[in-house]
Image 1: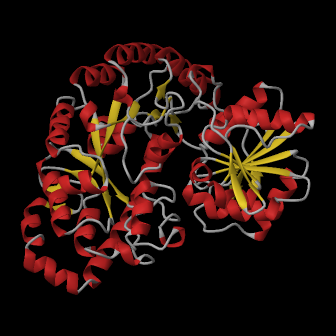
Image 2: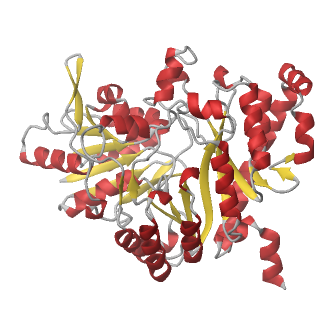
Image 3: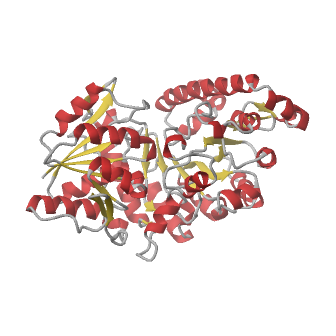
Length: 515
C-alpha cells in the first residue's frame, strides 16, 4: 500500500512521522515523506497544489504535528481531502484535540500510532472496516467516537530506526516542494538529534505530557526507556549511514538522568567506543548526580540543559505543579560547576500572566545566586491547547480558547507579546528577564550588568517603566534581532568547528587555532 506522510511542524527531524514510516516500510508498505518546515502562518496555493500532486497516487494520507503546526495541518486536510481517499491525523495535537481534528481529517489517531496506523493500513488494504481499531477517533453524525486506547508499546527496543533514507522524501524550500538531497553529507543539520525514551516523570501543567499520561492512566507503563545497548546501536547507525558529517549529538529525552547509575555507566562506555561525538542532554534539577555527571563528561558531554522555569516557589508549586525548590536548583548548579568542560544551560519561562511582580523578582534573584558561568534559554509561555494550564486559563477568563492561546507562537522566538493582551502584564520585568538570555558571568546576566540589577529592580523604577513601556519595547525588539543574528552566526560556527563547545568560547578557540 502507498502511504503519504505529511508533517507540518517547523523542523525537519519529524521523529514521529519518520518512525511511522519505518514501521510501515518494515511491514512491506511504501511511504512518501512530505516535510513542510516553515515559519509562515499558512501555506500558499502553489504549495497545496504541489502537495496534492505528490499524494495523488497514495492510498492513505497521514498528517502529524504539534499545536503550532495545527492551523497548517487543517489547511492541508481541507485542500487534500477527496472522496474515496482516507486521511488520518495523528501526533500530540490530535491526541489531545480529537474532535477538532476528526472534523478536518475524518480519522484521528490518539496516542502512540505505530501499531494503530499499521492496523489501519492493513484493514484498508483488505477491505475490512476500521471503525473499531483501538486509538482511533472519528465523527459519527454529530458525535465524536473515541475508541479505547491500546497499552503503550512495552519495549522501545522493538521499534526500528527513524526513517532517514531520503529516497522518497520532499521538503518545502523557497516556496516549493523539492526532493530531499540523497547524499547523507547534505544532511539538514550538523547536529544529530535522537530520542530514546517516552514520557516524563513530572506533571507540569504547561506541558502536554501531563494530559497524555492521563490518557494512558491504568493502561500500562507510560514512562519507558530504550536499553543503553540499543540506544547506542541506533545512534551509531544514524551517524554512520545518515549523518556522517555530524559535529555533535543532542539527546532529546525529557530527563536523561532518570536512568540508573548502571544504565548511565553502560551507555557512557558504549557511546565513547561506538559514537564518540560531543554529547548534549537534558536533566531535571532533582536528578542531578555527581557520579552520572562524571561518567557522561568522560564520554564527551559538553553541555547539559536543566528546566528551572521560574525562581518563584509560588509559581512552581501553584501554577506549574512543578515544586522543585530553588535550593535544589542551586545544588545542581554547584554540581555542574565541578565539571568545567560541561556548559550548563538553564531554561526559564516568561510572559506568564499568573506571575506577579514578586514572582519575577524571585526569578532574577535566583539567577544571581546560581554558579556561573552558565547560559540561559528564555522560553515564551504558550497555552498549548489540551494542556492543563490551557484549561485553567480558559476557566479564569485569561483566554477565550485556542484562537488567543498563543498556539501559533514558537516558544523560542523571543518575547512575543503584541498580539496577546495576556502577555503584556509586567512587561518591564518580563523584558528584563528576556534580556538575560545568553551567557551569565561574574559581571553580567546576558545583556544585564549585574551591578545594575538592584537599581533596575527598585520599586520606583519598576513603577516608572510600567507606565512608560516604549523603552522596554525597544529593548525587547533589539534583543530579538540580536538573538536572530546570534543564531545565524552560531550555525556558521558550528559548521566550521568540529567541537560545538568552541562556539560557546570563541576567544579560547581562536587563541588555540592561531597560536
